Length: 179
Image: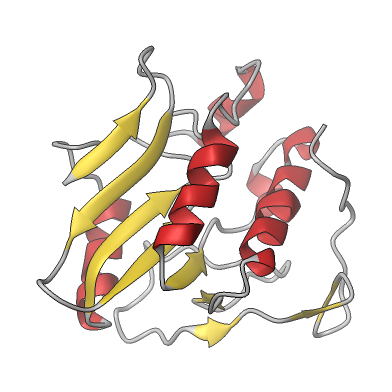
């Protein structure tokens, strides 16, 4: 078990858990880290471990569009830089290290509106890698489902979009670059 935490302890950039001696490396991308670190587990961490084990992974790595550590996503609104000064560099390394990418940040509606475009930026980084990109299905608004309340028999499906549109024709309201 390992984690990369900022010196100020306000940001977690990477979380790793060994699962088995052999297999693929899965990268999960939640919205922001909670309390899990090199020695502390949380419910999402345990759930990711369970999914990774069932898929035959040797390890999972977790990254987040927002590196600010808080169990409450609403806390991101009060932070000057919830993304974290080194987060994009760590996301790039996580993508490079992984065999399978699994975004699972849940419905963007839980984020303040000004932070929602960040999910599109990270989606772009994931897609640009050309690595397998899978989700646990989509929320009613077209975002990757969060696994916490899902059964371990929930299948992964390809995350497909067509020209900025969800395949069912709906669109997200914002797609600007990170400011």
